[in-house]
Image 1: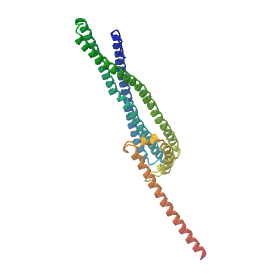
Image 2 (image 1 turned 90 degrees about the vertical axis):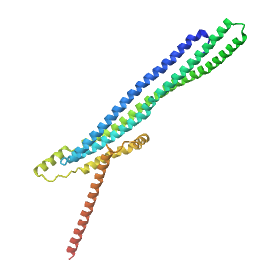
Image 3 (image 1 turned 90 degrees about the horizontal axis):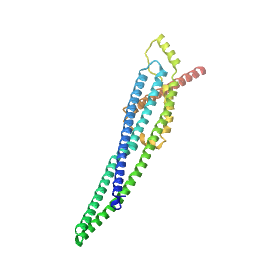
Image 4 (image 1 turned 135 degrees about the vertical axis):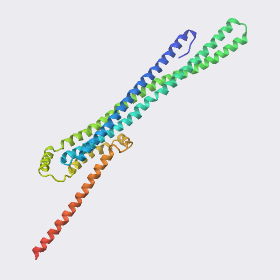
Length: 319
């Protein structure tokens, strides 16, 4: 590349133009890819935020529902499931930013450096051509001035040697540029597809749990409870804890299997602050544990009362 006699000067220009066009093409296409993946990631982030808002609405509805116990439990568990899905979507966004967009953004500087190398090579080539013209002019005008001709020849040799080194370096860098472009583009496209597959697989598992949670809503029992409350209105107490706890247990099982995925565990460690989803999850679990504790205390009190009644009856019979 960039070597030969004057008759090949046109090929030098063609080679330089070809390299310049390749650099411009890569810079343009990678820039469009970066913008496209960036828009995709931003819209996914907005979808994540909307999912968090929907989970909050479901949670508020579950807390305000005091008649339909089964519906309240189903809405609460569905809220937790949707929150878990949005946490996986957040991991998807973080991975896209790191593995896809981050790699594409680097090509602005890579293309700039490649263009500077090409420009330097062309300047060296022009210097060599100017030294060649000086030598030809010296031989033509002063053929017997051996000192001037020798000096022009030595300058041409230096320029040719520098051109040879620069052209060789440019050839290697151009080949490396093209090879790295192909390999990195293949890698980041593969990463994009893998990230999407992982998210949708996890979402499908959690959505299957959500379907079961919705199916567990007992509309007939809720309607009967509404009729009973309508006949004898009294102070309403928000319940549905037992159904909620069973659904929570079913939700925790698939999520515990998710944590065995090393890549998801690493990304879940960098999740967002718990303002949106985790706070709802922790409050529900805390409420569940408090209710369970109260139930245990009531059971202990009942058992102790039964044992005292049984002892007193035995003493009466013996008398």
